[in-house]
Image (cartoon, helix red, strand yellow):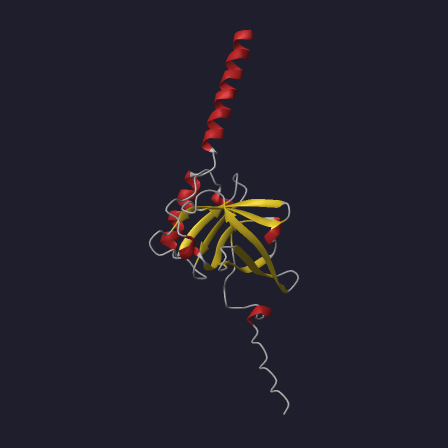
Length: 196
């Protein structure tokens, strides 16, 4: 009986070790160029999370000021509340600037990771992003749509890294029934001429 129990424990520990290895965090991309990554990204798909509940037409804009400060501006349309929402966070490199991993400060003292695990190294037209663990996953594109071949390639990589791609929610970026223009897209009123 004892031999059986020891054997069973050994099998369970081995299975746990195998599972942990299989679920290890994927490595971020290297040879990363932040300047090419800056700009607007459209969310093609995501793992649902409480921060993006009911959001469509989601975008992320990454900017850097002259002093090197990195800011990530996330925007989306709340289909339940019928209004646009916007969040802004700051980021810094988690490792070397050539490694595609950022530490993101949402609001003090809460930080998260922004880890780019797949990237169009030639043209920087698509990317796949995660955080620590396997709870979060985003597929991004420079355009509101992504061609099927590229999408399938990214899904295959995500599966290989242990992500359940069946959980992906595909973000509505369509213009068939577009939401109202966001407030930040409204033209600024012309300045009033000075009185003479």
